[in-house]
Length: 411
Length: 174
Image (tube, rainbow over all chains, first blue to last red; front, side):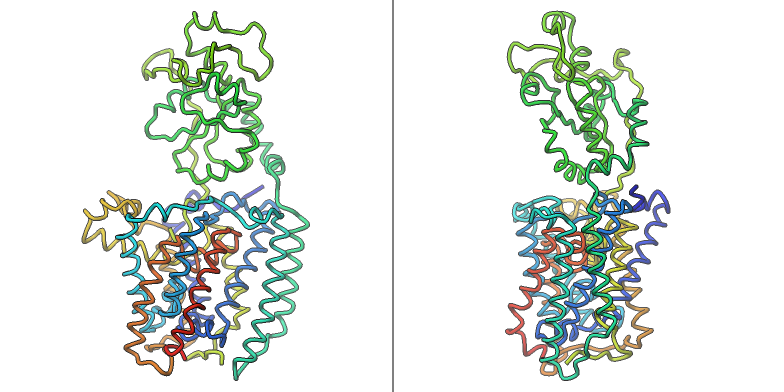
């Protein structure tokens, strides 16, 4: 399951992966230029309803790529969690888009098309690119004065199906049908505005039908659920659980918390009442129901982030670990023996004797506290002495090369 | 009338769209990142800023990310994608015999005013693309295909901005 996207750098090395990007870019430039997008007259004609090629090319490309991408994710070939979905910063995006629209009608290009204009000796394209450089420069100089707005209205990885509360298949089919409808309208508009109108070639009917058929296929297949995703990797990952490769000892967790080169993220998946009684310093209270949503944010963490899930023993942490692992969250571990083992390890005998409960149910806190102390107790943040023989451990945490991209084509 | 090519005819827009869509799919399949253009241009600019004005880079957090300390702003896949785009456009222009020195403009405007407008439009475009965290290819095309809400809102905003001002600028294009 999920062979794609490929771990490019691992496969081809630094320069090898860059050559792949060069080839993809080459095909991109070739198509843009062949579609006529190196010609500012062709681009601007879109906004006077004389030649709607910009609209047609763009939306045909979007719906074609969309149905293929979601067919691949439905079939378990491509991991949707590992592809770059531009995070939504709603109003900065809209304001930036409006400014770009103004730039488009004044300047006659957008950044990608101006590159192929330059490549085909269009002088207006060269002046435009010069303007773009000035614009980017001005942005770099002025952004510090309003970066609060620049970083506002952040919704993270937010998709249309989530917005409408519909399935991916439904939204995809709807977009394909709406797009085809708009293409038909666009043809009528061109016919009435243009003296040399060329009707749609016959094959476009077959292509449209093909897109609808694939979209229906995507709808009937459905996207893999968390459970499906786990089943796809269970064989390998259950073995790692059973071999105890992912359960880090209290010593290793404490050393992780004190490692300035790494970014530990401690997720406490117990009930709030237990969390209030006692939790490890820095652990975030996380409800099991929120884990899937949280997994999207964890994908945006830097490559040195290490996630450790924590419960009272290991029962609930194992469930949480499976859920996050199935969502392809990198560098995910759990605390061996949970909070109970942690308390036992880092508390003095006096405390243990006084506070240990006689009878402990499965996955419950094994100690009682006089009041809800949270992390205001020594055992929540034990002192760390690197060379203490008591603190030796066999390291299990191994950073994996990050696969989910942290920026898209515009970063 | 639909705009004619100075060389061999342009591709049918639906054919170009399907080709572009398949390419975008392959890009996501292989790399996971889709396409883009403004990011590459951005980094080339930062490279030159860093060359002539390195102290300044170290004071602006936005630039620091790309070129702070030993970081080379050109050491990024986006730069190679952008170089590829220029190269691909060059090859296509040669094959289609469209690679000729010219200024495309409306019939009722001069070459020089077209150049000035291109610079002004470019400034807006470059500024807006950074504010929106992407351009037509990175945000609208790639983000649109993977159903990002922000990308769709952005896409409508670009078309809205252009259509709103189209009437005011009609004499430059018609």
